[in-house]
Amino acid sequence: MSEVRYSGVRESRPNRFNDLGTTGREAEEQFKKGCLKRADRSFAQGLQCQQINSMAALMSLEDSVFISHSPQGCVGCAIMAVDMYRVGQIHRGIKQVKNPRLLVTNIDQKSVVFGGEEKLRAAVKKAVERYHPKLAFIYASCASGIIGDDIDAIAADLQTEYPDTIMVPIHCEGFKSKICASGFDAAFLSINKYILKKQSVPKEKGLVNLFAPTTVSYADQREMERMLSLLGAKVNYIPFYSSLEKIKRIPAAEASTSICKVFADEFMKTLWEDYEIPYSHTVMPIGIRNTDKWYRGIAKVLGKEEEVEKIIAKEHERIEPLVAELKSRLQGIRVFICGGTGRSFAAAALIDDFGMKLVGLETPTYDADAQVDIEYLNEIHKDYVVDIANMQPFEQVNLVNKLKPDAFIGVPDWAAKLGIPTTHVLDGKRSTMGYDGLLYLGNKIADQLQNPGFNKKLAKHVKLPYRDSWYEEDAFKYIL
Image: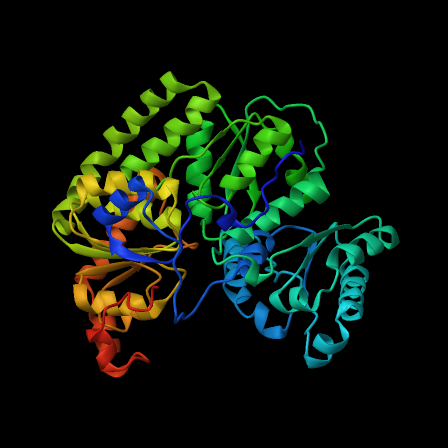
């Protein structure tokens, strides 16, 4: 019987849901009973696609070029990853700040009719001859997938012509999955197939693969590396600000862990299957409880359970008095949270450190991992709304307008225009994780609450693109 391999489409795993509107208690109970059903939306707005996540995951790799076989509009969202890359270089002390080498084939109507393979071939050749990279990532798109352009064949053909550049085709067509995290999986599957190739390499004592997405700041990277170094571990920080050499070190690691709960979870399973690298998959290290849990998880894999308890005790002794001061400023504040699956659940646990109350939670996916988190949240928060949605700001503003939280934590654009104090949880420029990040994030929320003037003025002069009647409707009316 042939081995069953993960396809890179998250819906292929059982019990994953991306369209749901309910309460925390109801979600927990229905999942336990097996009564949650795959739903859909008759109207959807602002989906995040796989392609941008595949691109963002790798766009800071050194000595690489990135060719998007798509219309121009598909690379528009890359501006966020470009910004993170530029800011990250500055934070790391790089004086000559660069943009990623990103090319787009600009598929048009003619390409749709006659095919776009020649455009892609020309773009890859131009990129390689201009930049002489070690890696050339070739991204599929909805358009190239519908046309049927064979990016694998073109990559294989050009590999013989340019042997010094590794050609890596990535199948991240947006229509393959409604769960945008599938884009991360598509990138890692291609890395494993075209770069690692199941090659056996000697193990490096104490080496840990630390997988991190673009939204992890340099301050967070240093905090995670500090914590792991206290366990005697050396960190292979990948793939953000990484290189071909660091990618090739992945199989040499003694263990793997991820900062983001859904960023490399599937890839770490593949590394166990192909290279027997044990891994820790727990939570995102935001807040005291989650940071402790994340730390204990990787310590267990490394056989450092006794050592980690001593370190955690010292960290608690250092930060708990400071957390108590913040709690006096934040006690009883009602909060709505919106973010990625790992980050939103972690932030919901974090606010309990400060005595804050959860009234609403929006996150892209619900699955067995989310069930573990929601069971914990239901012990500390009562009567909160859960919106499982890939973006869908029209639902978010409806809920926020009804629930009227004191503060909003997440991607703040829409909530800010409602006049609510907002704190950005996807802050790739500042510290939000680990024991030190906990204190920064708490202070930032408290400062926003004390200085809400900008958002209040913004609400007076900016109107969101929704009719007043929409705010009276059921936020989940389009979930079928």
